[in-house]
Image (cartoon, rainbow, N blue to C red):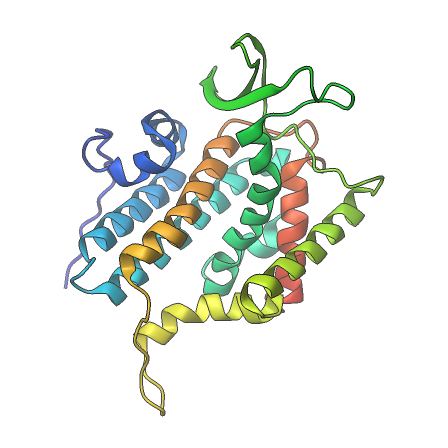
Length: 284
């Protein structure tokens, strides 16, 4: 058996990049590959390779396609881990979970936590923002753009007049008058409620089941072996594509951006919630 190292990425969006391009657009996929250091870009490239091959397995070997999709998600998470490591001086401490980058449970816990932030912030992107007392007078629209070598959120009026381009990391989730630690705990309680509503599981049960899905497909037990009940195209459309989109946006935003303070803002709150989920699930 022999292995050949492939360290080149075809930046033609009509070719190899297309599966990711349709999720976040050519400009941002090309930005990731052009700006990301080699140790980050190589993980994104492998994720793209897994995803592209999974698509080709639709109707051929659906279970192996799902396993490749899971591997693609894990590779994107590791790409984000590497980006965090490279910018460690500007970001909150994260060595406790970064050091477990080979643990499937740790990697597959990442996107459920990220989706909690996407759910909170997504409405702001879709519907714009306004200010108390101005709700019926003015709405600001936000759109991601590549500006001065970084991904920013461009704020503009409904008539298109640009006001300012924001660093997405200079944003913080507030909840009444709660301080940082209490906001993270409130986010965790909301996370528990949402997991129970959607799956009927506890957080720990959900994280375990998500990570064990891969092993359930791969290996038999004394009682026999399991077969995948879902169609691969439905899993790709309804689950994996959503995860890849969120992870790619998170990675693009992390490249060359830094928060105003390492222990303030979205990254600090995300790390706090992610650590809370991992510790609750006995993973760290």
